[in-house]
Image (cartoon, rainbow, N blue to C red; front, side, top):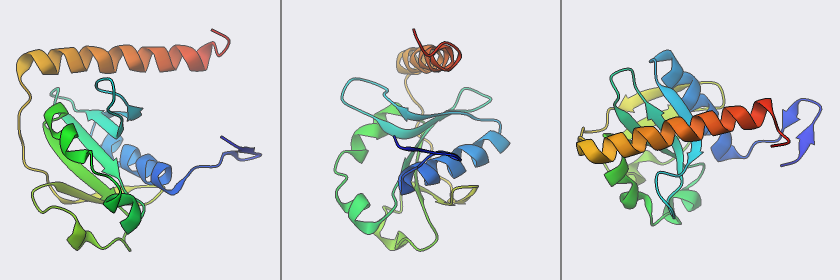
Length: 148
């Protein structure tokens, strides 16, 4: 990713993800961007809440970005709640009404519509929580010791 004197240049979806993560941190969630719950799936944001609840948030920066995403329904099996995060100019009528909605920018977000809850099975929650923890620790180690 190109660097500037102010840090990396982020794409529109990455800016939305940053705002979403900032908002969810205020709600006591731990977030990972670009997390892979299983091989072949990559979610924009996965968040684990203070009671162990798992949310997936897909960030869409445009109508074309949303319409080209045919894999989102496969993420429903990997979370207790599923959300879309879009900016305030996005045509939200395109988004399924039985999913959550956040309006976001690079600095914050707001939950407009709470996603319905669909509890993960216990074994999947355990495996996913362990994967989340390991992935988080490995990212932290990579930041602390980039040569490894």
